[in-house]
Length: 256
Image (tube, rainbow, N blue to C red; front, side, top):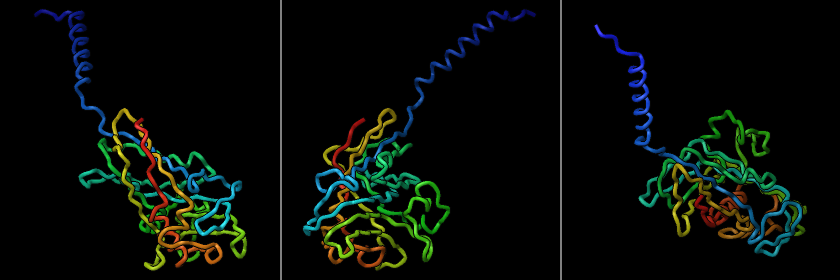
C-alpha cells in the first residue's frame, strides 16, 4: 500500500486553510452600529454657566443656576415607516457639572436610516418599581426620594433669584404615583434635514440642546414671585408640561 507523503499532506492542509480564510470576505458585515446623543444645556442662546452668570426669564426675573441635572431614559429611534428601535436599558443622568455626562453613547443599534428620536425625561415608573438601583440610579446621585416609597427626581434645578421671596430657587420635578401629579414626560424630536445613518463603520452624533428658559415659558409661564420652590405636586406638573413642550431641540447631526 502506498504511503501518503507528509509533505503533500502539509501542502493540502495549507491550501485548505487559505481557502477558509479567503471565504471570510463573503461573510456578511456587522448589522449594528453606534451613535452619541450629545446634550448641550443652554439658557436661550447662551451656554449654561453654573454660579457665574445672571440670566433673565420671559417674566423679567433675574436668576442664577447652581445645580442642573436630569434623567434621560428609554431612548428610541424612529424611522419614516413608523417602526422604531428602543435602546435597551438606556438610563442616563445628565449633570451640568460633569461634562462627560452630556455625551450618551448607544451601542449595538441596528443599521438603518432613522428620522427622529424620542426619550423620557425622568425615570419611568416600571423601572422605579423594579428597585435594585445602581450606577446612575444610585441614591448617592442626589436624585432619589424614599419618603413615601421610591421615587426619582426627574429634573433638578437649584439657584437664586432676587424675585423669589426666599431668594432661593428649588425646582425638583418629581412624582409619578398619581395621575394629577405625574411629572414623567416623553418628548419626540424629528431630525432636521438629514436622517441619522447607523452603519458599522460610523459613529454619528446627534447634537441636542436643552434650554433652561423653556422650563419657565410655554403652556405655563412661571413667575419666581409665585413659583420658586416646588418638590412635586401641581406646580411641578406645570414645569414638567413646559419641559415636554419645547425644552429639547435637535440642532444638527454630525455624520461621523
